[in-house]
Amino acid sequence: MVKRYRLDEVAKIEEGKIVPKKKYFTNVGVPLITAESLKKLMLNGDIEQLPKVNITLKEHLKCSLVPAKTIILTKANMKEANKYIYQCETEMCIANDIVAIIPNETIILSDYLLHFLKWYQIHKEWHHLYDILIDIPMLAVQQKMVQILNKIQFLLKNKESLMTAVEVLPQNFHNFSMQIENHSKSLHHGFNQAQHLYDVMLHKIFKGELK
Image (cartoon, rainbow, N blue to C red; front, side, top):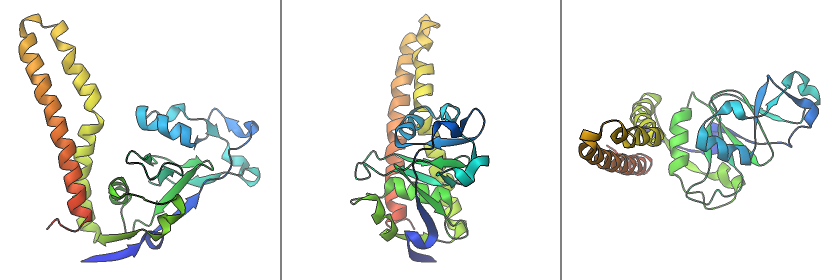
Protein backbone atom coordinates (compact mmCIF):
# COMPACT_ATOMS: atom_id res chain seq x y z
CA MET A 1 0.00 0.00 0.00
CA VAL A 2 1.32 3.40 -1.02
CA LYS A 3 0.00 6.71 0.28
CA ARG A 4 0.74 10.18 -1.06
CA TYR A 5 1.77 12.95 1.35
CA ARG A 6 3.01 16.49 1.23
CA LEU A 7 6.52 16.65 2.60
CA ASP A 8 5.49 18.88 5.49
CA GLU A 9 2.96 16.22 6.56
CA VAL A 10 5.69 13.65 7.21
CA ALA A 11 8.61 15.87 8.17
CA LYS A 12 9.32 19.07 10.06
CA ILE A 13 11.04 21.63 7.86
CA GLU A 14 13.18 24.02 9.86
CA GLU A 15 15.17 27.05 8.81
CA GLY A 16 18.58 27.67 10.35
CA LYS A 17 19.32 30.75 12.43
CA ILE A 18 22.23 33.15 12.56
CA VAL A 19 25.75 31.90 13.25
CA PRO A 20 26.46 32.23 17.01
CA LYS A 21 28.98 34.73 18.34
CA LYS A 22 32.52 33.54 19.06
CA LYS A 23 31.91 33.37 22.81
CA TYR A 24 29.55 30.41 22.27
CA PHE A 25 32.18 28.24 20.56
CA THR A 26 34.02 25.53 22.45
CA ASN A 27 36.34 22.55 21.90
CA VAL A 28 33.66 20.08 22.95
CA GLY A 29 30.07 20.67 21.93
CA VAL A 30 27.51 20.34 19.17
CA PRO A 31 28.85 20.71 15.60
CA LEU A 32 27.73 23.84 13.76
CA ILE A 33 27.14 23.50 10.04
CA THR A 34 26.94 26.27 7.45
CA ALA A 35 26.51 26.07 3.68
CA GLU A 36 30.27 26.44 3.23
CA SER A 37 31.16 23.74 5.76
CA LEU A 38 28.47 21.44 4.34
CA LYS A 39 30.19 21.50 0.95
CA LYS A 40 33.49 20.54 2.61
CA LEU A 41 31.79 17.86 4.69
CA MET A 42 30.34 16.31 1.54
CA LEU A 43 33.87 15.98 0.18
CA ASN A 44 35.80 14.65 3.18
CA GLY A 45 33.11 13.42 5.59
CA ASP A 46 35.15 14.66 8.57
CA ILE A 47 32.60 15.95 11.06
CA GLU A 48 35.35 16.55 13.65
CA GLN A 49 36.59 19.53 11.64
CA LEU A 50 33.33 21.42 12.18
CA PRO A 51 33.30 24.18 14.83
CA LYS A 52 31.53 23.25 18.08
CA VAL A 53 28.86 25.21 19.93
CA ASN A 54 28.29 25.20 23.69
CA ILE A 55 24.56 24.45 23.88
CA THR A 56 24.50 24.63 27.69
CA LEU A 57 24.05 28.34 27.01
CA LYS A 58 21.13 27.69 24.68
CA GLU A 59 18.80 30.11 26.47
CA HIS A 60 21.07 32.87 25.13
CA LEU A 61 21.97 31.10 21.90
CA LYS A 62 20.24 31.86 18.62
CA CYS A 63 20.94 28.55 16.95
CA SER A 64 18.66 25.83 15.54
CA LEU A 65 19.37 22.39 16.99
CA VAL A 66 18.39 19.37 14.90
CA PRO A 67 18.61 15.68 15.88
CA ALA A 68 20.56 12.84 14.28
CA LYS A 69 19.05 11.54 11.02
CA THR A 70 17.92 15.04 10.08
CA ILE A 71 18.49 15.77 6.39
CA ILE A 72 20.05 19.14 5.69
CA LEU A 73 20.40 21.13 2.47
CA THR A 74 21.89 24.45 1.47
CA LYS A 75 19.20 27.05 0.82
CA ALA A 76 20.97 28.24 -2.31
CA ASN A 77 21.59 26.18 -5.45
CA MET A 78 18.74 23.73 -4.82
CA LYS A 79 17.91 23.81 -8.51
CA GLU A 80 21.30 22.39 -9.42
CA ALA A 81 21.73 18.68 -10.15
CA ASN A 82 24.63 18.52 -7.71
CA LYS A 83 22.74 20.10 -4.81
CA TYR A 84 24.27 19.47 -1.40
CA ILE A 85 22.27 17.03 0.73
CA TYR A 86 23.55 15.52 3.96
CA GLN A 87 22.11 13.20 6.61
CA CYS A 88 23.19 14.18 10.12
CA GLU A 89 25.00 11.45 12.04
CA THR A 90 24.57 13.32 15.33
CA GLU A 91 22.78 16.34 16.78
CA MET A 92 23.80 19.54 15.00
CA CYS A 93 23.34 23.30 15.01
CA ILE A 94 22.37 24.70 11.62
CA ALA A 95 23.18 28.20 10.38
CA ASN A 96 20.85 30.56 8.53
CA ASP A 97 21.99 29.38 5.08
CA ILE A 98 20.86 25.81 5.84
CA VAL A 99 17.42 24.23 5.86
CA ALA A 100 16.70 21.04 7.81
CA ILE A 101 14.15 18.30 7.14
CA ILE A 102 13.37 16.21 10.23
CA PRO A 103 11.42 13.09 9.17
CA ASN A 104 8.66 11.47 11.20
CA GLU A 105 10.11 7.96 11.14
CA THR A 106 6.81 6.38 12.11
CA ILE A 107 5.80 7.22 8.53
CA ILE A 108 8.97 7.68 6.48
CA LEU A 109 12.50 6.43 7.13
CA SER A 110 15.23 9.05 7.10
CA ASP A 111 17.25 6.97 4.62
CA TYR A 112 14.25 6.63 2.30
CA LEU A 113 13.68 10.39 2.36
CA LEU A 114 17.39 11.00 1.77
CA HIS A 115 17.38 8.92 -1.42
CA PHE A 116 14.15 10.59 -2.54
CA LEU A 117 15.64 14.07 -2.15
CA LYS A 118 18.76 13.03 -4.06
CA TRP A 119 16.52 11.94 -6.92
CA TYR A 120 13.94 14.75 -6.79
CA GLN A 121 14.60 17.80 -8.95
CA ILE A 122 13.81 20.92 -6.95
CA HIS A 123 12.86 23.57 -9.50
CA LYS A 124 11.99 26.35 -7.05
CA GLU A 125 13.38 28.05 -3.95
CA TRP A 126 13.79 26.20 -0.67
CA HIS A 127 10.45 27.28 0.87
CA HIS A 128 8.67 25.26 -1.82
CA LEU A 129 9.95 22.11 -0.08
CA TYR A 130 6.71 22.16 1.91
CA ASP A 131 4.70 21.47 -1.24
CA ILE A 132 6.66 18.47 -2.52
CA LEU A 133 4.47 15.40 -2.97
CA ILE A 134 5.93 12.01 -2.11
CA ASP A 135 4.41 8.53 -2.43
CA ILE A 136 5.32 6.52 0.66
CA PRO A 137 4.99 2.72 0.99
CA MET A 138 4.81 0.82 4.26
CA LEU A 139 7.88 0.93 6.50
CA ALA A 140 8.79 -2.70 5.76
CA VAL A 141 8.87 -1.96 2.02
CA GLN A 142 10.90 1.21 2.58
CA GLN A 143 13.41 -0.79 4.61
CA LYS A 144 13.96 -3.33 1.82
CA MET A 145 14.47 -0.59 -0.77
CA VAL A 146 16.79 1.36 1.51
CA GLN A 147 19.00 -1.68 2.17
CA ILE A 148 19.68 -2.08 -1.55
CA LEU A 149 20.21 1.63 -2.22
CA ASN A 150 22.50 2.01 0.79
CA LYS A 151 24.72 -0.86 -0.36
CA ILE A 152 25.19 0.74 -3.77
CA GLN A 153 25.84 4.13 -2.18
CA PHE A 154 28.44 2.60 0.14
CA LEU A 155 30.36 1.26 -2.85
CA LEU A 156 30.16 4.57 -4.68
CA LYS A 157 31.21 6.51 -1.58
CA ASN A 158 34.37 4.43 -1.32
CA LYS A 159 35.13 4.54 -5.04
CA GLU A 160 38.09 6.93 -4.84
CA SER A 161 39.94 5.07 -2.08
CA LEU A 162 39.43 1.71 -3.80
CA MET A 163 40.55 3.03 -7.18
CA THR A 164 43.63 4.66 -5.64
CA ALA A 165 44.57 1.43 -3.87
CA VAL A 166 44.40 -0.52 -7.13
CA GLU A 167 46.24 2.11 -9.18
CA VAL A 168 49.30 2.13 -6.88
CA LEU A 169 49.68 -1.65 -6.98
CA PRO A 170 51.91 -1.68 -10.13
CA GLN A 171 54.54 0.24 -8.14
CA ASN A 172 54.95 -2.80 -5.90
CA PHE A 173 54.20 -5.62 -8.32
CA HIS A 174 56.01 -4.78 -11.56
CA ASN A 175 55.50 -8.25 -13.06
CA PHE A 176 51.73 -7.88 -12.82
CA SER A 177 51.39 -4.27 -13.93
CA MET A 178 49.46 -5.09 -17.13
CA GLN A 179 47.00 -7.37 -15.33
CA ILE A 180 46.49 -4.80 -12.58
CA GLU A 181 45.92 -2.03 -15.13
CA ASN A 182 43.24 -4.15 -16.81
CA HIS A 183 41.60 -4.84 -13.45
CA SER A 184 41.67 -1.12 -12.70
CA LYS A 185 39.82 -0.37 -15.94
CA SER A 186 37.29 -3.10 -15.17
CA LEU A 187 36.80 -1.70 -11.68
CA HIS A 188 36.25 1.81 -13.04
CA HIS A 189 33.68 0.44 -15.50
CA GLY A 190 32.00 -1.43 -12.63
CA PHE A 191 31.63 1.77 -10.62
CA ASN A 192 30.08 3.51 -13.63
CA GLN A 193 27.60 0.65 -13.90
CA ALA A 194 26.85 0.90 -10.16
CA GLN A 195 26.12 4.63 -10.50
CA HIS A 196 23.84 3.93 -13.46
CA LEU A 197 22.07 1.19 -11.50
CA TYR A 198 21.56 3.55 -8.56
CA ASP A 199 20.08 6.26 -10.81
CA VAL A 200 17.77 3.75 -12.53
CA MET A 201 16.58 2.33 -9.22
CA LEU A 202 15.84 5.79 -7.83
CA HIS A 203 13.77 6.58 -10.91
CA LYS A 204 11.83 3.32 -10.76
CA ILE A 205 11.21 3.48 -6.99
CA PHE A 206 10.05 7.08 -6.83
CA LYS A 207 8.14 6.98 -10.12
CA GLY A 208 6.29 3.90 -8.86
CA GLU A 209 7.64 1.69 -11.64
CA LEU A 210 9.30 -0.87 -9.36
CA LYS A 211 7.02 -3.87 -8.94
